[in-house]
Image (cartoon, rainbow, N blue to C red):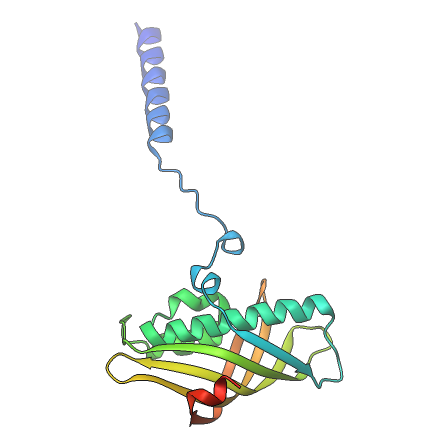
Length: 189
């Protein structure tokens, strides 16, 4: 009798483990470096780079920088439009993300669209290990689309510090030094 009770108890435990194992939802979430970023995929801009640094990036580092710089602007534009800090966290350093997150009220659509059309990036300093750089974007052409007013174009000078962390260049600091409105016909030249 004790033997039958023991075998029945073992079968019950085995059945319980089987049901628990098969009832688990298996998530197939890709690691962040394999996920596609729709915001970056839809972003188009032109980036020209001039290197002034003592240490020079090689061609592959320069191409990686160009792609990530475009991605940074894609997420800055998205942040400007929606106040969504989390979407761009892969392009912000931890300290910059924390600073943005403390000032974030909530995610909302502002209705104002911003596009970056052109960048003339002057790479001022490139670290010897290739993990830190400072840049001045001397001719950033930005297009603002206001829902009721229409489009406005500006020519901006922007300074940035970027750090290479993980598999992206990430923004650590930004400052708009100057931003002037320009006439749309000057852009087409």
